[in-house]
Image (cartoon, one colour):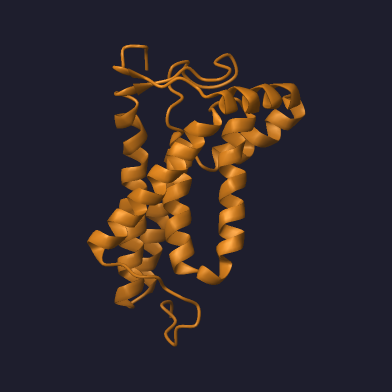
Length: 189
């Protein structure tokens, strides 16, 4: 991405304050761990995981509701993978520290956060009794983008929101409701 996108999104004072604090915390050991965690939210890995899960659900289950949920997750992840690329054609923002990670003008929104937002919404619907674990894990993954100075705080908030909305729209269009663990039917044999 270059500065050719028509809308410049300047970072907020809060963005700068958080980035400054992260810059002071940054170091090779911390970055090594964070890079491993952030890689798990990469679009290629998440799409591959969604595809494998979809194939498994379709091959191993005859439960229609479970199959529709698998369809919905795969569809949400595919849209979540494409959406940040489309949005970055319109919005431009320089990364907090472009020397460390990514393309210099590709900060808004965080693609990793879009992917995680879409997945966390679906996962929470499927396992509402695990919502705390799901959301805390999601926060850890998207937080790595801020700590690595790949994105500003508001990039991650906007990306997460886009992922949640994307999943909600896809779920509504496909008519997918939550699966819950107290169901009498086990979708897998």
